[in-house]
Length: 92
Image 1 (cartoon, one colour):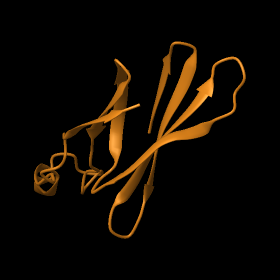
Image 2 (cartoon, helix red, strand yellow; image 1 turned 90 degrees about the vertical axis):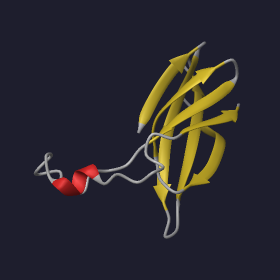
Image 3 (cartoon, helix red, strand yellow; image 1 turned 135 degrees about the horizontal axis):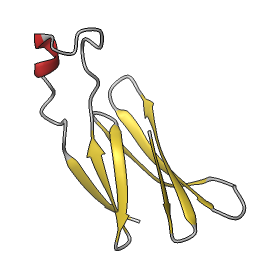
């Protein structure tokens, strides 16, 4: 879902949808030798659309998908889940 390059590291934000929730994972690799390993994983009721690393803490911006992508002005797109926009902080 997102990529971050910082301090000689590449971080990938990925998500896996489960039947009850979503598992959010962060993978890390050196920028010189690409070999990703999972460094963080947590479950949440939706996926993380973006993330940032600040002072050894990860911040995740939780997202949602629109109900009607063909008609962006559809009323169903205005009923977003309450968790949309949550910011989650997790230590690295």
